[in-house]
Length: 229
Image (cartoon, rainbow, N blue to C red; front, side, top):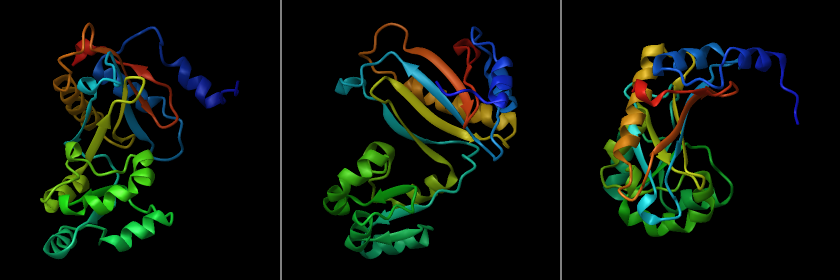
């Protein structure tokens, strides 16, 4: 077992692992126990009582955080003709067709989000084996397969984040940076929480949200009291 650094040991002493903190307390404590030397990302994690193996219990979508994520994301758009011109005018970082597909197959991944018009999905589908594992495959559920490329690009640039339940029933979503004001992180946190509450599958039985925590890139996790929402 790897030995924890002194900074991490000190950070862990500040967090009561048996306690569920209020939303505001948890955010403040996560920032206080951040040990990274850079402006670390603040992330929330949900353990949900769902069975992702069942189609009617898969949770996936996207939401624009009111205060952004603190990161400017580069957008690649697969489009042609007028839609390609529209994407360029909207501020897409890369726009193309088969040329970009070949570049990606060659190992190029200097982008954060991929958007595609529906007529380009036959071409983009060939990239499933390389984009899929990285979570970059465009999907209608996240608004990244659309004819409204301007809206898709603007939302990404404004702080749109995607969420998806993993095989263990967990959802991880970034809500900003340590440098954010507490109030902005709390507002982003509430936005994610509301979306996940509304996304509860009808087939999910019992307590839907088993555990909620907030953490920074290298910091300890802080449990959040669900009632504080």
